[in-house]
Image 1: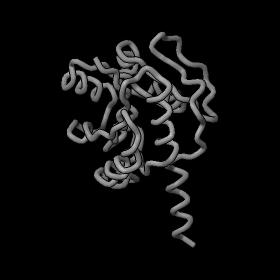
Image 2: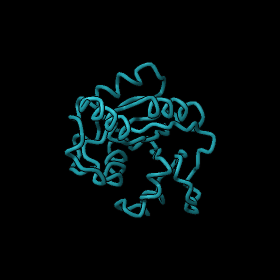
Image 3: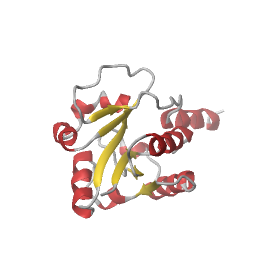
Image 4: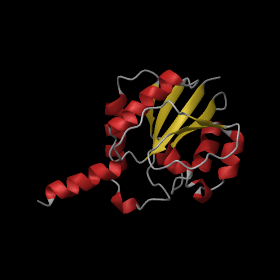
Length: 172
């Protein structure tokens, strides 16, 4: 059985924080592989702000091409939209019954867990690896399936910051 971490995101755009964390996770956890799951439509974000999904997918592939045990997946592209994590995990379990799936999420996303569809089902069935994010110091839920990656590096960058900087640059 292969234990696969699912690191989902819009990757709009992918940046060194995503790549650095992906590399750290495969080196410092018990995950055998990490799949960057490019999300075509995050239900908590406006779809109008996204670059085309195939562009984001190709950019993510290029960004991690030299990192062993990390791959980019377009699995959600064929699923109903918006992309709910619980639905994706169910579909992955059906498609890959011999594998075990875990989630890799930021502490800032954990703070939104009460807005996730079927969060209780997710955390009851799947390990959730939580990496720290500055400004997200809330207490973690008490669950043996939630693993805080306290030693993970902090990357002070976000796709939103990059997009905002590009807007500022183009509007000069």
